Length: 225
Ligand SMILES: [Fe+2]
Ligand SMILES: [Fe+2]
Image 1 (cartoon, rainbow, N blue to C red):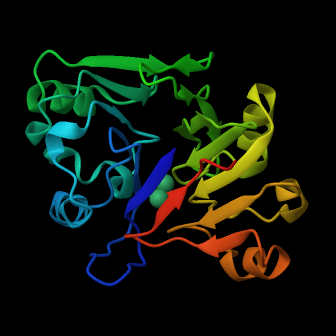
Image 2: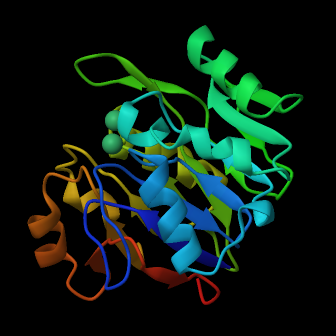
């Protein structure tokens, strides 16, 4: 299993950066779409990914830095389903339908939803000062699950609790926002903190062998987890 970071505020040589987040799983499942479609397109191309390889899209929440690259959906002919939190606005739903006519918009609400690829979307949680609604991605690994978050507005500790109901938590990748409960990451083998993580330095200091800072252009091999 392979995860490529295709959008982040940090970048590796040859890749573009912007505020926001996007990852590509097994070259076919795109989770979140960053701040803009130009950098997202360039980073996918830099990884030698054709847009037609992408079969499924999931959007964690409606913030601009996660749906800003949505226009790229028009150039992804193989996408059959887009997974969104039930709370998504009509405006964005209309936009998705216009960009990819006939696509299935799958609402994620109180129950976890299994995607066609076998990945799982966690139930919608509400949280943060602005009561944002967000869903996260769970990948089944050899020994448990890997959790991928957008911004973790409802609180990473709560999302980790959801993940641990499904399997042993082996990896956490994504935006951790204001997460401060560092002991909650105990036992996690791979921690990759990206764009909006406020306590990146503290996380890296506490888990020096497991944690690293994310960047566009980073490729993560989850096959041993
Ligand atoms: Fe956000
Ligand atoms: Fe974000």
